[in-house]
Image (cartoon, one colour):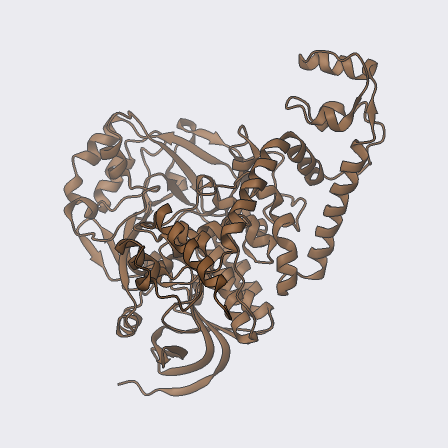
Length: 629
């Protein structure tokens, strides 16, 4: 029995220092709260155990929003990226998504440096084995060595470390990601406090030695020449870019894999956890897409100071000998050597329906939760939740109302609302298709949507706020300017002719020309005589998108008005749903379990029908008409 002793008091304790834990701890500390972050291993701070990249479809939006609110992920990837690329650039601006290849060791070092030099933030290497809960309220934590830390609020950001097991063929290893220690005692503490735990699973591909690859057999993949930064604070950073490489599986590869499914923990039944739908293992891909003759693989560098290469698209739990056999059938990988084998990892996580929109446990006051522990996948989803959990933990200490972003304000709002209102039966991944207002929630306008909110929270510092205000004023001034500029027909028509557009008979306002889908600023620059000398690219982008999508934006704003009307219809916290006889039994059960704050949230609960919403609206109207209500 380990002796416990008082190790100190902190206003906020964050358990875990992955991408969720880092954002939670930094947010809390930057808001003036004395914050302690506890990590099993300080070498795991902001670790990238899977893909060495930040961003991607939908995920890039989250990173931009984190940055606009004053978080760290965008700044950190800008300090440590190897190449950058805008995905979906041939499509509309709503789905443009930035993705950067990271130097994973530098990413870790930079984040650790920032945390170590943040005022009010204390970092300790320790494994939390027990939560101190009294009268359904968190009071602190106890570590494996007996340190008892007391606090007002706690944020759980345990990632994939809880009860985790690694699967490589027949081998089952009690371990956390990347060979680090797992946490088992804390699992028992959570169960003791009646938290519902589930088993999820994820995986990561092998890392291979770059010296053993034949790059002539693969296609080189460079990033964008005119690359964009993740942080709105950075206009440009000089980069010595490192390429990625593209290759493909083939029939021989598939034959080796399909002939050895008995050496995959996923197909032998040893893995019980539910895996991510949108990031399947290679063996799952072959079983699911039997008609595909090949699958693309990206060979991605893990950093400037290592030869390790990440085999993107080749996640597997097959045995190490089979991994080597099927990879050597792939062009460019014929002599490859595995430095770290691929593996699947199974871990405990909670049911996010147990959380409020502030990411606080409904049954345990002052206990917040974020990241993969909430049933999500990905660094970006974790960081977004960590930021919100850290903000709300700090606000609780300050005695302020929680900070909640709704679905019309941010992808972060969509992410959290989906989790706590709809729940998830598999690791949740953000995609642009999950947002019904995605034309309004573009990554390019995240600063315009959220910087003011971050400033009021105290996370956005004055230099960032001043830059934001300058951009807002510049956009307004440019809109005013182009509405007064008339382009003469004799100057305009040669440009229109070159673009294959019918000529005009008279001069036209520049604002009207830019509303045309075929015409952009760059087309008019030789005849735009009043254009400011240093008109910023981001200002031009905002003006062009606003003008070209004006009709669609107005439609979405009307949809948001209807959405807001339902969100403003507050449901009393003490309502007894079981007393409303007109509600169906399933609706009563679901409403009582989730306890929605308003009619809008209630309408998004699976199992609650439009007829049930009508019953609630009638009840609220009756309640409103009662005396003293």
